[in-house]
Length: 336
Ligand code: TRP
Image: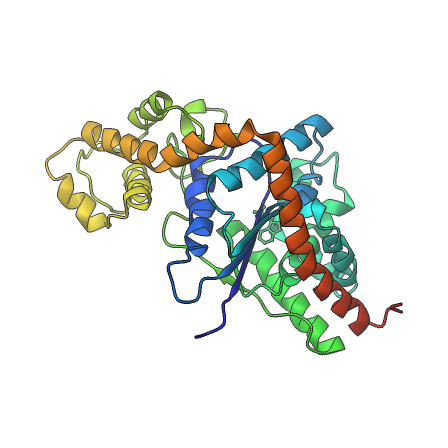
């Protein structure tokens, strides 16, 4: 039997997660924990609360959003026998390893990160060092668990590439220390687009409230948002260039139901966009139902969530501390 692989991913908690977060990331995470296979992956998932501090927000909000995202991950059933769900700051060795990795990262390569450049523009009044070393902390998150696969969205590919370069450099300088991680790009659905402007990514900060579906939107709201989704004037459900709105709805529908584009086209031959939009709404509602049932129960049980977080931190630290000690020794720190 082949040895199991380690899968790692973290998500930032910045507000209520969207259908885009779900179909683009969280649904893939859940599928990777599947223990139905011969060699289930060892999955480690978490809330990147330290990364969230790179943008200023009120402390009460930071705390609440971390707690709610942690509850979200549990409500999605990510905590299994072969998986760990933790909060990044509960495992302090991430920041120790971050320092070691910072010393093996060049100023020039960190300066080339497009996310750093974008965020520096967006938050011109707070270009802090955390924003600059964001990718080395992310590399530490990954390398500390000797992760083989990292499910990430498009926007994080450059960071993962940097993590690989840092790992190779560290291994080269000090001897084999880290597994070189590989990106895991999920099936389609990686990019859910705005319902109002399907050339833009679905975003929770969109000023138009109809552009974005949230994971906790009640069924009626989901129906309404789908009905007002922007389409085209052709009135035929088929995937084609120039039909961004319909392509996006088809991609959402396909992710929720598992149906291929051909099957969808076949089902909706001769039917109008109204019917299709209703079907998309029902598919989303069905897909989110288990989560929406579970989430409020978990949120109401603070003691249980705290206990899970402590367990997650303990299990994660056992792996993380071992790698960190190894890396410290390799680079010549005096270990007593
Ligand atoms: N930067 C990632 C994002 O915003 C979150 C993240 C932090 C992450 N550490 C990670 C993702 C480690 C994968 C692996 O999406």
